[in-house]
Image (cartoon, rainbow, N blue to C red; front, side):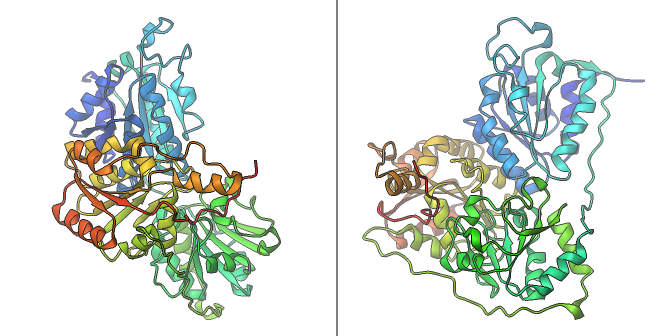
Length: 545
């Protein structure tokens, strides 16, 4: 005998069985049936202050759990507000299910508030380029197949976000059954080029490992170190790959590109073989690489073949599939007796700190890891503060530095830190953001306060859009639109939202604030008033107008 249940019942049950414990978003009529059912099935709903932040929270949650994040938006503007977070998740290969509402199918063609149909804001079409799959579900009895397809894409292979647009009457439709196929992880290894890869590494004169964001996403930190130590190859990190290897490992030769060090960039220009682990080799990584110095050979490990072998002039050996699976296979099948141990002396890649009248952000970042617990993750927002962190912050725990220099969405770290803390409550979670980012999405601190999600927010306040100002000043001689005539007071703003505030103008004040905030274990906002004249390590990319 079959019992009828609503589509919302079936979806809520399926998401719970997938291991989802929390969802994020802003509720409204068009999405109410599913959100409320998810609460009934034990999935806690975290109401945000802006849908974009809720999408970032779902991404932070997915990053920490390794599973699926879920973010909601209503029809119309609730859905369009999620688009930025969807594109960010796609750029970072983070599996998030974005669910938006829609007026009832039977009411299509009737002008309605917050229209999501093809008559106004067609969310299903809008999300297609920003996700791996996007679909309007027009009938409840079709949803099982569509849902299975969506979660399979999100959680398999080149993982990433998917989107379902659910009309109100479809959510409440009664069905007899709703078959769900739960994806199982497969080992994805590319072995066809194994011999070419090993021979290229053994025969290179000056090989170099470029560790990208993929090392952090796949959790291949141990395998990266084993590969480097087995062949005695130096390692540099892309901006997003920061933290792939501890800062003081003898084979680590620093970050490269925007926020990189001179020594690391020099190594890029004198290596005959790059072993690229999970990096697209964007302009943020190879901005200082001269065309005439492209390596003879490139070995590129990447789950997404879109840019493999298409950026440099080098002869390319591609290795597709999961990075960690591939490295495990290659290392297990390696003939250790035939390995070439390359001559790679250690090198102090650190540079001199700037000397300024006011507080230098570089000096803060260079010692911050000494002030915080080892069991931490640092989410870093985009801007000059982010690239200062890339250059100066000492990552002790591999994988504990999260930074996106590719899509580079200001304010993403605020939500991601909150979602990560929800998923990993025993870890100390920090967010380093700037005053520009903070004014965009800083109200999300109230979400953390209301739900007692104790994230420590460090707001770098130099009263300007620093990266834009310094770049424009250098390339155009103008700074239009980069100064805040009335600068924000981050402490007052944070306190107005229920957080504990600290204002710091010296390194000693910052150290004391960190210690107090960690001990307090509540939402905290630490405002760093830094020297406005500090030059960020971002001047490598020149725009000619």
